[in-house]
Structures are given as C-alpha cells and as structure tokens.
Amino acid sequence: MEEYLDTIKQIIADLHPELDDEDRDGLVADGILDSYDIITIITQLADEFDAVITADKITPENFDSARSIAELVDEILNA
Image 1 (cartoon, rainbow, N blue to C red):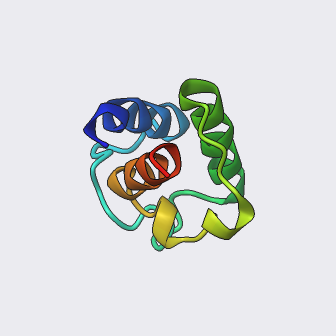
Image 2 (image 1 turned 90 degrees about the horizontal axis):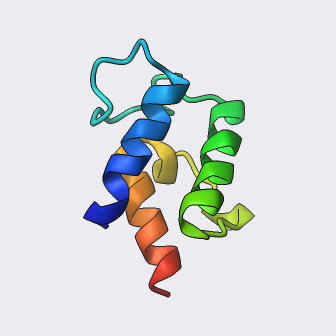
C-alpha cells in the first residue's frame, strides 16, 4: 500500500495545490474533493496502476484520505 501513497498524494496535490497537507482526513467529508475530482482520481489510478475501481467501491469512505485511496488500490490489485 505504501508504494501507492506518494503517487496518490501527488494526484491530490495536482488537483488542489492550495492544500498544505495531502495526508489529511476528511477530503470528501469536508467538501475538498467533489465528484469531478473523484472521477479524475479514478482515471489517474487506472492509468498509473491499472486499478479498475468499480461503482460499488466509489464511496466517501474510500476517497476521504490519501491513505484510504491507497488502501483501496491495494485491495483491488491484491484481490
């Protein structure tokens, strides 16, 4: 999972350069990531890691932090 984290943090930083902490929780809950951002992240995860994220995995909990996104990628790739 750790091997995905830096790339995911960079994706988040590219989407929201105003964030000073890509490690923060609450990215969805606090309204930082919107639906467009999530679709962009999903697309970039597919490009970077060949991780196909199905609709049932697109939940606020799975996209609320860089760590939760990395856990999701790890789960998908190691299933």
